[in-house]
Amino acid sequence: MARITYRDIVIETRQGDIASQPDLEAIVNAANAMLMPGGGVAGAIHRAAGPGLAEECRTYAPIKPGEAVITGGHNLPNRYVIHTLGPVYGQDKPEADILARCYENSLTLCEKHQIESVGFPAISTGVFGYPMREAAEVAFATIKSMIEKGLTYPKRIVFVLYRSQDQALHDEVLSRIFPSS
Image (cartoon, rainbow, N blue to C red; front, top):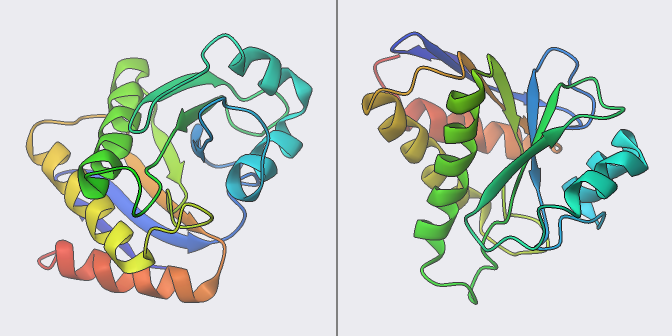
């Protein structure tokens, strides 16, 4: 687990299941365009949240790559779920800009709702094929830029990575993007 504080906002990584994070007010779903249960992160979140989440999501679907919407957490231990649609690598262009918008729009929703803590998965790195290192670089650079532009919420941003090697990679990228922390 890596943990840094940058301008009063804590950024950390941990290995775990994004759908089992009771210490976070919100979690981010790497959603599909229809915001319905699927594989990977979306499937895990929907299974844990129960059918009410899919029912609420129907009112917001479809979303476009880079967009984000917020729902209740239903049976999850989290108050909110922020759903964002990441780019399909090699198909949705320009990938880095779209991925950055996923983080920007998710964090903007945190700011709007004054969400204290949020957990992110590695958006677009599963079946959407985004290379893990490049995705981590986009994520942390975007977060740093938003903090420098005055982001005040959330107070804590946690990357919840399912595999230990993905957490180790995120730890490395985090320490490079935020070297003085």
